[in-house]
Length: 364
Length: 180
Image (cartoon, rainbow over all chains, first blue to last red; front, side):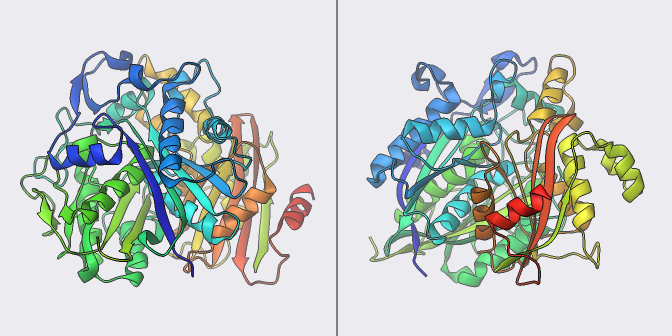
């Protein structure tokens, strides 16, 4: 089978406008998480990682559409592909898109996907993968499948999320937000922070570089808003991708690590069941917050950069293990000589996903 | 080859509560669901095969629409100024419909939600076929549930399987089945 590889990436976040800038910021332990009062007209203060709207909003476009198209543009340029080719497809990953304009505009996610494809003169139907918090991971898997179907030479997978009163009040109503910067897997963790970002990966065929080896999505079939107590779906997704590798080959598992009590405990159980307790684990939500539709793509790109630099990224916000199993959470940056990693995510609707990435070709 | 094992549809204007009482009746979570989830749930009931309620990883649930969760999003937005409703907020995700079907039926396989500009049979068939690249997936409940408003929707779904004796799952047979 031909190998599906990453041939161009981009990240726009409060910490930088390129993958390299974002990677350097993560290595330095930075974060843009800060407390907002009155933002979006939300009564209760909240902590979030938000982008500079003035910098990124293009006249005639919403902030969301602006960062989607800009992230896609940068990844397309990095990959050097023809985005208008009928052999190129676009996949958009988002959960709420332009929801902040629900009262005044057509905010269907498909509209944003159409504007994305139109911005590049691409003739193909624009598909949105909206699979809650695993959307970015599911969209990458979808891109891989579209390539393997033989219909396309390149798939541009773009993930983005912007925050709004709609989303912030929703998570507040669920009492899921922490009032401080979040603490993935920590004993004192008490909820998540929301974040804004856009990230894109162009997938194509190749023999060297970062291969998207395989992935799986599995449902807990347990509860629409609470994770399985046995880590069922996460475990099954991990088990599927582990058919292609062994724990010894993995530099780390980059987990969801939202910092809610139940998510992180569930992931620890799934990691244990999958036989991965000896593999380093890290999470990036303490750096970027939960960037929802962007998370799977953003966190995958930074994980690739980490392995390229032979680093296991630190888990900002983590200090004392607070899950019931001895997961090897990386508090500080570590080193690795391994060439593969697993990206893990979970979301509402009981959905879980795992992707396996492996660096091929000559060692750099 | 993929084949169509079963097909189900719910005409717009159907009394969903009456349909629930006539065909299910013992699943009170139904009343918490938004309209899109009720439609998906009832379609899945019509498509379910024996043995029921046995955990299975080999069945995927793939749901498609144009509107996603927008109908319920409007209901949630109405609560935001006074008292944001957590019970409405959890339904503001296009994939909750897949979760409700998975929970009810103990389908532990892939669940995915896709949003498209319009019902496009070529893309629908292509995305379902591609989901079968997952080697564990042996069958998929795949449907178009587009809930524009609580009283304005399109809802139909197929049970598609690898092999099988039914008609091939392709664009022509999809059209033929839906138009019947």
